[in-house]
Length: 145
Image: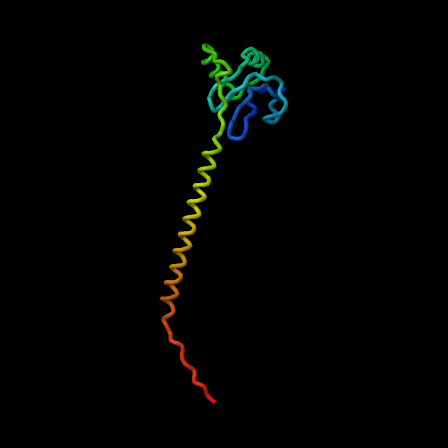
């Protein structure tokens, strides 16, 4: 069996968060895993948890780490001297109010621009019709009896 040590995404939309897992290389990204080696927070760039003994065990068994898994392992090795507490890591929440304000202001601006364009187009049409059709006085018809 070809085993790879790679990342499996567990984060929400626009909030990536990964598990470092040992898995059969022929399986999908988020399929069943053989071993959960650790977790990695992309937004903060921190390794939350990493089981180095499991990582080394799978390497000795012949598992091949991906480039991403190697980089995370190196990041863990650099930060292993001063481990941080898990409680200090704070989740990043998107600010819905600011996003909503931006959307509404963008909509208002686009509506105003569209109204200005309509007014300008109507003025141009009036000018064009006046220039194309010179004023004609209607001819009076005489009544014949």
